[in-house]
Length: 160
Image 1 (cartoon, one colour):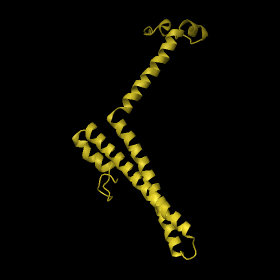
Image 2: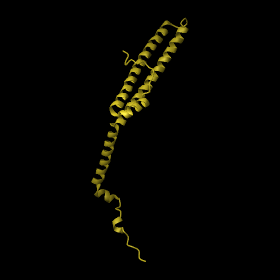
Image 3: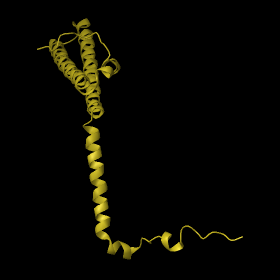
């Protein structure tokens, strides 16, 4: 019984070795392919960042950062309030200048907390705007309920 000849002759499958001589002869092809890969990655990354989900991801990161800043400002305000309370309790033993400094520190902390809360509100509104403009109405309610939970803060837009 005779075997059929190979479908792939040895000469057709022979691989070209990648040695220095090959690279020297085809350096333009190699450089062009590297540039093509870099350009493709750049275009894909920029398209991914400018897509609806990319914009939402960036806005959510900014909102999370503002939440952390607002939480830190609230902790500083609470610390300033407790310091002022402790100084008021022992006001007969404390210099009036220390009491005045504590009052000013509390005012500064409250002002910074108000600014941080306003910046958080701006970041939340930016997320709302992206959800409204970039996503279909079917997904909007789900995204708003997922990323913007209802909170019981001051409903006024800004505090001047």
